[in-house]
View 1 (cartoon, rainbow, N blue to C red):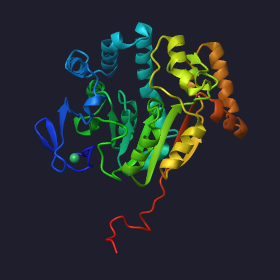
View 2 (cartoon, protein in one colour; view 1 turned 30 degrees about the horizontal axis):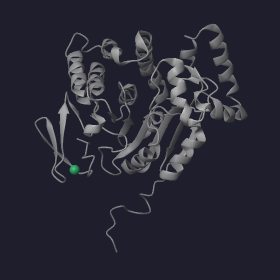
View 3 (cartoon, rainbow, N blue to C red; view 1 turned 90 degrees about the horizontal axis):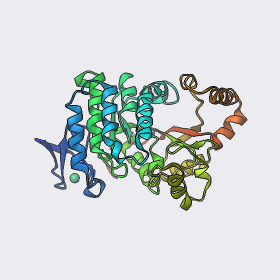
Length: 348
Ligand SMILES: [Zn+2]
């Protein structure tokens, strides 16, 4: 097992459905095959009922069918969504598209990760699109998220499409307190995640640095604060251009979807926080819009998307799109110091 105690980063001993840290005495339960490393403050008041619902979904008629599991999961959560049934339908469609999208991206801008030796961690793995994409490429990819009920369903989704001995390890954990040893990973991915860690991105990046080995990779994708397009979570234009303190209220009022806890960053804000807290050497890019997505757009939107893609061949335009395009990607690696300084060299 790759997981370590999130408090002291030491080895855990399994005893039935409990993992015990012999070093600091901490105990963590394992529910539906998923260790729960969250602190009690991170659990919602409704956590137990949510987990029961998830268990009944994965043991019910949807078992073994990825699409049915995704429908059942969002269906069960519909009453919690302020956006109502149309929002639920959007989340289902977005999740299903996500599996196709991540498959393409694992062979696109995330391609450097497909060549690494070590384990890939997907932080905020959701229903497992990124993990599925890298597992299909033959890599070991593990995932954490902050919802245990979600991960129980994610495990069933991954089980539905791969042999039992390859089911990736998942854990409920805090992005700021990773249940992993120092330098134990080849890469860490934050796909549409850092915008949900307001005021904590610096700490998250320090954690990514801690768990990644020298020469290891960091990859992230996030909506652009200064996008000329609508804010992608709520479909409201211009949220990021407002002063920070007005954004949540404005987005919630205009969309009817709760926007608290989301904060978009610009490329230069992300570049600075990574440079200030880690030694990852990052390159940022504005993605083009995939042909497969354009085919499903209405005619006017498809024309705009094609124009955007063809303009993005020009370096000047790419520079502009990085500033005002809807999304951006960052990928980079730590310097590989293993050849000139041995981490195991005895002191003196
Ligand atoms: Zn411990």
